[in-house]
Amino acid sequence: MLIAGNWKMNAASMEEFGKMLARAPEAAAKGVDLLVCPPFVLLHRLAEQAQGSVLEIGAQDSHYEDEGAFTGNVSPRMLADSGATAVILGHSERRSDHRESDELVAKKALAAQRAGLRTIVCVGESEEERDAGEAEAVVTRQLIGSLPDTLDPAGLIVAYEPVWAIGTGRTASTDDIGSMHGLIRSGLARRLSSRAVPILYGGSVKPANASQILSVDNVGGALVGGASLKADDFLAIALAAPDGRR
Image 1 (cartoon, rainbow, N blue to C red):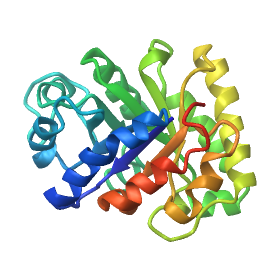
Image 2 (image 1 turned 30 degrees about the horizontal axis):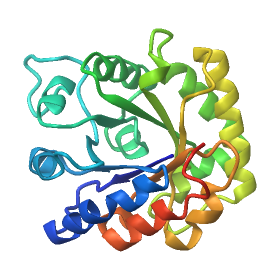
Image 3 (image 1 turned 180 degrees about the horizontal axis):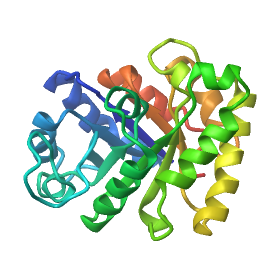
């Protein structure tokens, strides 16, 4: 099971990060992997601090080329050189704020895998799409468009993040989560002939609801936002995993 922290454009104190490092073995003993994805400018610093630890460091986005005239962008190869082992792609905030398409996410995913990064591809519907009864169609379309046929399932992680539950304090019901994760599981089996790809849930995950969410069928972990900035909250979520293996 994987608990990934997306710090977004925030920075936890080095004291908080130090606590995460110190307590990461508790999660590992339960079979839970921990991943922290800080802003680009902190990536190398945290990767150096985490060297030799069971806590991994990832990035929040990357470009689809290894190098070139792309001002302001960072390539997956550069991320790997900085110590990242994984990257989040297609997060709803990238899709909405930066107009990232499924096709672009797919190109980024292939580039990330070429650089040896584990690739967390995010999918999820908006409130309007869910209210219109289009949630399953939207997520299916994103899966098809964002995952190239040549993507290696061994390096892939999918995160289901209902957009209406991100940073709002709202959380999908366990029935909703189970239904959508089941849909994604079936879609991955058809798309990539794989049933081993972990599927994370992301959307206002916190210590109070983590145990319930992580016990749902086909939930292989969580993509955590605000709660990942506090060591105690982040570790509480990790330790709420029912058996640490799914």
